[in-house]
Length: 177
Image 1 (spheres, rainbow, N blue to C red):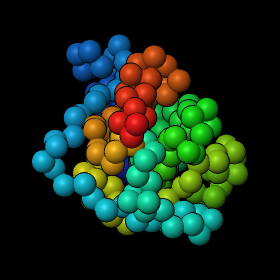
Image 2: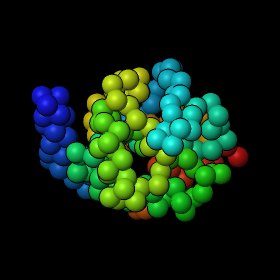
Image 3: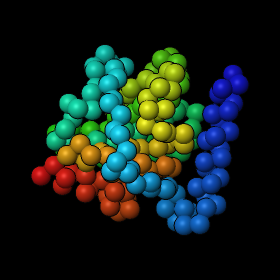
Image 4: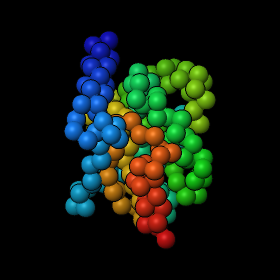
């Protein structure tokens, strides 16, 4: 229970920072460029339906790896726009993987049933995937271009249907052409 309480405090701190940092209030999120010299973790995880996802297998498609938890209000708020983006672009162009942070399978299944989430959900019960990617703020979304290069990590809630968000994900598609 203490771990959950700390997670809630982290989420509240992130929300406060998002609304009170200079410039962040205008967009509600922060973009951290990925250093070209930084190693890219090899993502391999199994979704709730049993499908194994490997980042290497997704080359040629843009990939968004979204780190979320059902207790995180900004995470819940951005899920519908993430799902809509994935559906609009189609899985042949853009793949959105939803990495659930440290929640039980029952909690995740209940969230999916309640919300109708159709994105591939990759459980991260020990937080190992989040640690590999250096994620400490929720939600966070890793932006990977179709050429396989990580471009940035977006921290905070994003309306993925907005023009600001399109400026982040649209160039990812072109990198594979």
